[in-house]
Image 1 (cartoon, rainbow, N blue to C red):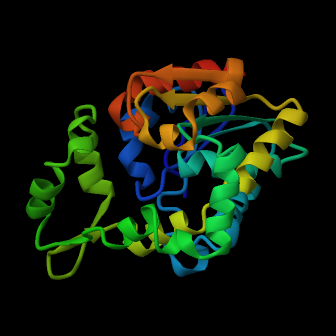
Image 2 (cartoon, rainbow, N blue to C red; image 1 turned 90 degrees about the vertical axis):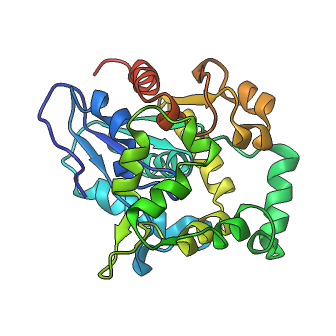
Length: 273
């Protein structure tokens, strides 16, 4: 879907959201970027049966590439947060005839022994039974009213770290109202579970390496206190990204905790047209 359009000077930007957070939740982060370019986003990746993740996220990847192919020819910037960063790199690696630039926001590469461990767990089917997938499968996804959802979610520690206004954007974009007035998650917890269980760690790493080999600019924004980055190997990632690494004083949800600073970092990494 086209999230917002402005016909201005910089190349168009395609933004891809994190697992479980629709694009509308990123309003405060995206608006500064939309001031000088046409901005596109898929509101809810994989939320319909046709685009459920699939092995190695092949259907999510196809969903993103289908949108890229519909965009006008010419330069394109791809930016993604967490899951979206991997998908941005994977989609950019397919664009051999189009000039592209890429920024990943706290989308760490899984390297070395950690990559081997994740691959073994996937092959054994363990990613469905341990780790974030079963946690997502148990996540509460229904509330009797929007006020009840606000009260329940507003007590979460990670929500309290968000910048002013972001929680309101999550309540608006992250929840759907049902005919009886109750609300549910806009991205079903089953979709979130399947994304984690079919994690495309090898595909993402191959994509970043292909982009680098072609001389495509690929930047990385790290959350200083990101637990996801710690689990993936912070120092290993710091060495992998080298001079393309930018760090902000946040957790994993960088665009929610520091939306303006994250937008500035993205703009700096992408550079001028």
